[in-house]
Length: 490
Ligand code: NAD
Image 1 (cartoon, rainbow, N blue to C red):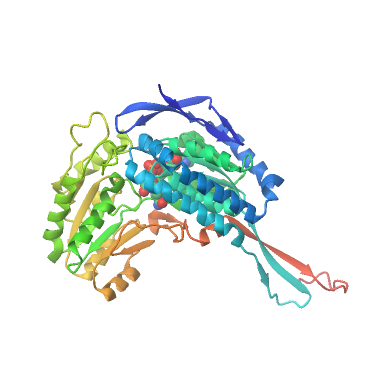
Image 2: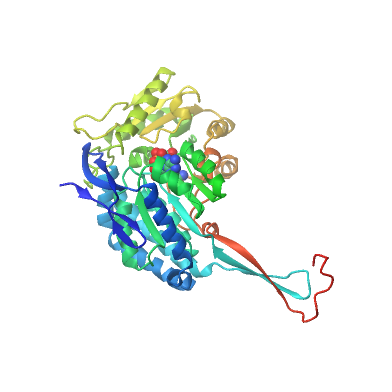
């Protein structure tokens, strides 16, 4: 019996007129029916969000009361983490070890923004006119359109919902058509937490109709998008119609720089975590390993051993370390880029094949390729899969040049025990995140986002909440004297 999910519009759970099949990537079999939101559904959701913006049930709540709703939502996420994790694992193939721990941590994002809600402050300005008082109010920007990709949907929506709701906005959140189950189930927790009808609306559907309708809707004031650069360009063109402010969290081709003096065991674990966790389907995947010549052979040997020892299999099994790719399309893409890379001179060090003996699931072996130059497709393009491209350098200057030779700039990692070199590199690397002697660490307290094709704007941290506000300047004249010359600007 197939499971079925509903969309959440204006405080009500409902079926959509049409549905689509969702495939369990571990088996290749359809396991659930998902509601495909139409343009008319999107319009109803945006209208509801727009109405809710000014209705007293939301608009008259104090900031502290908004914070309390977010605290309640955080508790519900934590209490339901296991069930949400199982759904995410079933729908995306991401291993249960990771989904459970990540969703537990998603609750911390809601807690963080719950605490921020009543700390969004306006200002009093010492204006240069003696008979005027001027202050600034920070008001919610309006209806937000949140759009997320298929990896980590609960996590990627928390960094939008948390600050948007703390600021007093309302939101229509579009789950990806791939793996939407956890976000549609999360809608039940939003409802249970007691947010007024229309404040949060959650639906899913395809980019061409549902996504298009949402990003061109005239009542949307802000678009918070996570996904690929091609879709981002399309959305920015769409946003020109309404001049909706847009933040973009996009892909990456993040370099991991390893110097001769780094600790071998620690580096090899970090490199493995950077590229093979989540089967490489992570925007911050450390997919380019840049290794100094003196360390090269020792590190590659260790990485090959570790890659071959990774337990690939059923993502619902807690012992599994690498699950399938999320979609067949994704596996096809990885295979074709890999083939082109080998034709361009890359040398296969391990992997390169579909993992055997696992039925019809979209499994792919952890793969390492040695690349002679940056023209190799796997060095230049984001694969979003378990493929590590290795390049070798001799000097620090070469390492920086190779690291920055990309149009992306999301994350980077530096492994060295030389403190001054580590500091130099934190300045030289063009990326929104530099991890030194660690990789893939995140926190609600720390901003997250990229340079170049990796995006615009930052999510996470205190400042993110300001992106969901706009200021209103309020002038109050304190003099009872008649206004002087009306033809002169005051
Ligand atoms: P995608 O761009 O194809 O899709 C992302 C979302 O956009 C989906 O919900 C999709 O339905 C929607 N969409 C597609 N066309 C649309 C349109 N015309 N209008 C509006 N919405 C539309 O990306 P994907 O393949 O699902 O995800 C992988 C990408 O996401 C990778 O590039 C990855 O690096 C990136 N990503 C970035 C971050 C980050 O925080 N920087 C995090 C996770 C993933």
